[in-house]
Structure formats: C-alpha cells, structure tokens
Amino acid sequence: MRICLLQLAFAVGVAGSQAANYPAPAAGDYTIHDFHFRDGESLPEVHMHYLTFGQPLRDEHGAIRNAVLILHGTTGSSAQFLRPEFADELYGKGQPLDVTRYYLIIPDNLGHGKSSKPSDGLHARFPKYGYQDMIEAQYRLLTEGLNVNHLRLVMGTSMGGMHTWLWGEVYPDFMDALMPLASLPTQISGRNRDWRRVIIDSIRDSPDWQKGDYQSQPSGLRIAAEMLYFMGSNPVLRMKETPTLKQSDETLNHYVANVMTNLDANDVMYAFAASEDYDPGPGLEEIKAPLLAINSADDLINPPELHVLERDIKRVKNGKAIVIPLSDQTVGHGSHTKAVLWKKYLVRLLKKTGP
View 1 (cartoon, helix red, strand yellow):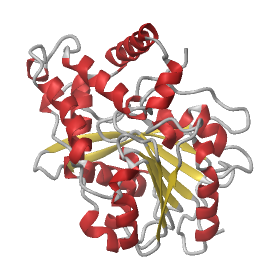
View 2 (cartoon, rainbow, N blue to C red; view 1 turned 90 degrees about the vertical axis):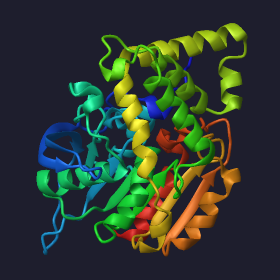
View 3 (cartoon, one colour; view 1 turned 180 degrees about the horizontal axis):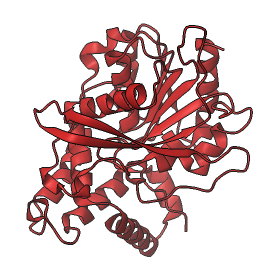
C-alpha cells in the first residue's frame, strides 16, 4: 500500500535510494559559538549538520558562483532531498542541479535532524527559536562554516519555502535567484494557524507531557501526527489510495506509529511554534533577486482560493508565481518534493538569471 506522507513529517528517517548517476553527498557539522536568539536567550554552542554535493567555484573576484542552498520543511531534514522523486530528477549529469556543475548545500535546520534541537537534552528548556533565528543559523553556517559569500540560488519547500522569501528580504544581495515552493508570503493566519495550534496545544496540554521531561512520547504527539496526516495530501488521492474504511484506518495507524517512533514531541512542538514570527509581507518590495514561487492547486495548507500568492507576487519587483493544477500526478502539499512536476520551471529560472 502506498502511503503519501506529509512532507512536514518527513524526518521519519526516510532517506531514499542513492541514484547511480550522481555521487553520494558529503556530510559535515559546524558549531556556531555564543548564539543569541531574538527572544533574548542564548546557547554557548549551536550545532548545524549539513550535506553537500559538488565543489564551490569562484570567479576572478573570489565570489562563489555555483552554490545552491536547499531548505527543508517543518520537522524534516536534509534526508528528504535524497528521496528519488527529488534527487533523481535534479542531481544527475545534465539535470537542473547537476552536481558536477553546482555546489549544493542542504542543512538540517536549527531544531531539526542532526542539528541542535530540544530532544538533545534541554527538552522544553531549549530556547524558543523562530524563523529569523533559523535563517541566521543558516547564514552563519554558509559564511563562517563553509566560506560561502554568494548563492546562485536559494530554494526551499514548505517551511524552507517560507525561509526562501525571508532570505530575499534579509540578505537581498546574497543570491542570484529565489524559488520558494509550497508557501505563501504572508503571516501565518486563518486555517494555517489553526492546524498548527492544534499540534502545539495537543502536545503542550497533554497530561503526560510533564513540562517536556517525559520518559516516553506523550499521547499528544499522536493527535499531532493525525493532524499532519490530514493536511498532507489531497482528498482525491486519499480516496484512491484508501477506498475503504479498513484501508483508511490501517494507513492512518501506520503513519501515526511511524511518527510516534521517529519524531520527538518537544521537537515537533518547537518546530511548529517557530512559524509565529514569520511575516514577509511588509518587506516584499525589498526583494531584489528574481523570484519564482511555485505552489500546487491541491495544497490544503496553501490553498489557491485564498488568492494570497497572486495578490502579493505583484509587490515583488522581479517576481513570478505558478500554481500547478490538480492532476493524477500532484500529491497535495507534498508536491513540493516531487520535482518532475516543476523542474522545467527551475530550468527556466536558472537560464534567466545566469549561465
């Protein structure tokens, strides 16, 4: 039975098979010392884990010209970009992000994967981080840890897409192009805020959460997992995959069991709470680099009927937006990692913005 997992929960350890037409990535870790969070807290060390493909190439002025930053979604990790539907479509010889030409940098973001996160030991005493903190950690990894002084492209999926909008505002001269996927350039509100609150509250208000010092995963994580599953696909695909009550229950039960085994409740709660400081709306005019935003029409998290993307892209000087129509190939919110759906647009963006 095929299970369409929500990309927001793809930190469950699925790394995908390594394709034969591109080399394995190199893994690394960088420690940021004396990291200060925007809420006033600090940590003496923040560890950032990352994967890289390829090698950096510098021009005659010393600027790196081929670096691509790829950013994952909420509760995800760099591992989601090793999945065949992403990597096999993009990384090989002659493909859009051919690793013999590009230097790909794929971090585990703050609070996620193998980077510093609540479950490492501090639990609910871990500083409350937001998207601005996450972007600062990314920037310091690039500039201090990897000596990257310019990006050919910033692209990201879901939360990573939201980070991409913010990168264009916070560091407008640092990149040649931007491609946010499955995201909207506006503050989290409406249903998007509501379902996130359900996840946060279900964990924090769970009687066995024990202020974050639980010995086994609290029951609230099960509710959070069910909400993740609910938001992750489109109803047409769900009906096709699970046409009976029994199949629906079995699939949901399997998904929840996977989350309960592979995710941590504090990490999940923090990751969703991090979106509370996301609001690129006031700064859209500050974005200089050409930006191509790609959403899918069957995305329950960023539904096109809100008309937010088509309204706000007009405020981006070099902005363009594409909404992929519903088809038997789209998979709801998770369409952002199914590169066959949108890689032709990535090719056009790269051609438009440089050799």
